[in-house]
Image (cartoon, rainbow, N blue to C red; front, side, top):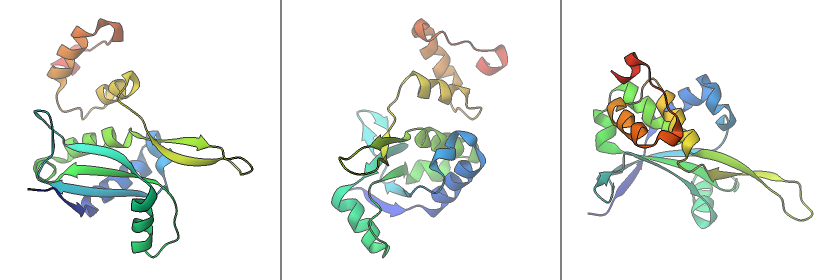
Length: 166
């Protein structure tokens, strides 16, 4: 069965709330973003993909702006969540998933000869900083898994308090 993508206004509302309320995401305020859900849940190997962030650009971005009857505003971030798991998540887990995906949304300055530099969306890959931000998030869903992972990566020098690891 091919995946079916639909607009996800509930995801959009929660993301907007996080962007407006949390300083970490201030750079995303007012930036064009698209929030969609996908059914069935996609897999990467044997792992279910609960969320994914990518950039829509080129013809796909142009078609999006045309459908909205707006002038072409260039590429933008798209966050996709798995519809079934999203519906079964509590608010805490939804917030964690969206925070994780929003942390992938970055911007870089692009300079074109003879023009003013402009900011373009880019993706922030999984790295130590993203991993640490996820760990510090009080809504992190699986602390026991992370403790085992951290113990296998001593170079990260992660410290856990007793109440956090319990």
